[in-house]
Amino acid sequence: MASLGATLLSGCGSQQLVTFGDMASGFNREVAFMSIFAIALSVIIFVAVSYALFFTVNKFREDKNTDAPAQFHGNNRLELILVVVPVVIVMFLAVLTVRSMAILNPVAEQTTKIDVLGRQFWWNFSYPETKADAGGDVTNGNEMVMPTKQPVALTITSGDVIHGFWAPNIGGQRAAMPGALKTWNVDTDRAAVYQGNCTQLCGGSHANMRYKVVALDQERYTTFLAAAKAYRAPEPAEGSAEARGYELFMKGNPATGALACAACHRVQGTTAAGAAGPDLSFFGTRRTLGAGMWEAMTPEHWEAPDAKAHLHAWIKHSPKVKPGSLMPTYDGSEYEVNGKLVKGGVLTDEQIDDVAAYLRTLKLPEEADYWNNTPVYGSSDAAENAPTPLAKTSSPTPGGKQ
Ligand code: CUA
Image: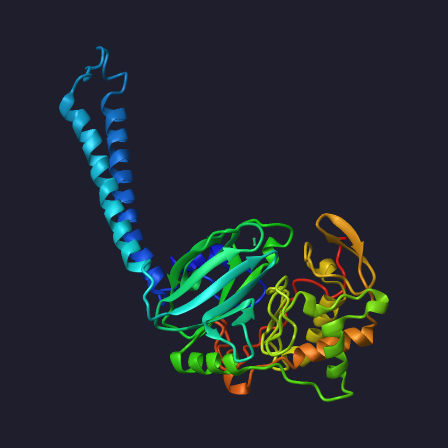
């Protein structure tokens, strides 16, 4: 089953094993237990029906039987058997299902709660029980950090259309529906990085709506959460590239029509509180860009030249590198807002690099870097900073679309 799952579900750029056969998850173990009965019953029924079919065809072949066939209309005993046996089978499977639901669904009082928000085409993961010292919920975009060895209660909703949350290794797929909140448990016994994908066709970049689940052992998780709670974005040194980037991030460039990043993004500990785009508070710690379109997994992370190139292209004209991205362009090209084409503002390449430099400073303290020493599950190199190169899914320059 594990290999089947891997074959069906893996195949994205980086090396990792994405499978619902991951038995480190209690959810997956429960489902596998149920599957044994369902599959065993199916095999028994298949064999029995096949036997009856071939037996009958052989025994009552025309060349052996010239008389009219025997009639059994009105055979109450036979009809009763044909009704009762399937009912018993279905009831048995229903009891098993209800039993599993009763085990998997209740949300314990004392458990980690994470709110999941799906938007075209990204995710926010917030910790409703952890209020940041700087105000607001601790929130991370596109990378969900969770503790191991306990059920984690996820509550999902959508800000626009229907999305689907599924990280097969931790179990439990759920749809994100606007206006509805759904809560369920996921869990894993293994500290590792897992892949999640949107599983509901939701628009042009449905396939580019990925996320990482980073499961940490309790101690490291506590360290992460405490640091995230205390986090305030660093203040860049006066006159530095980061300081210029900070100014552009907060105010844009009204002279050229370049919109402020802060209008759509939140950065904890600053006045940036936008909610239309993913939270960028820990951007420098994250290793994925554009909801998993690219991964900066080399030891230099965002300082690597190709990672810088991707980040530059992303800021410059995100809708060109990610179809359907609602981010404005900063090269003066047109992009779509509510079905209408509007002209983007302009930042120079130097200004874009300044914004990128500021983003790279948005880092959790070293001990709270959840990527450090966390193996990517299924990666051939499980050591720190598994050498998964920046996924070459797309060139940093605009592709064919738009
Ligand atoms: Cu969101 Cu597909």
